[in-house]
Length: 77
Image: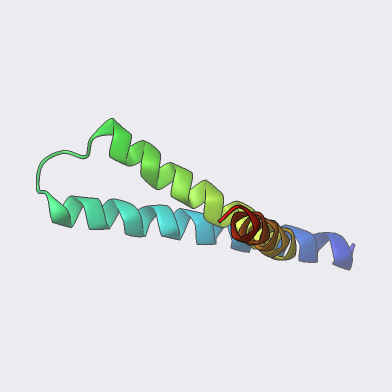
């Protein structure tokens, strides 16, 4: 049971990190322009939050993926 509650705590922590990042992006857009937030900007903020959530889930996999992309770009360029 302890292992399961630890996993739940970690997933909640990751989700809250993603939500905080979305909030930061939204506040940034809101302070940039005092008009209403565009749906596109809202979509961008949610996407950034999802990306940060996925990064926090699998940081090692993500780092490996970035490394592979950089290697491919160096070979092409």
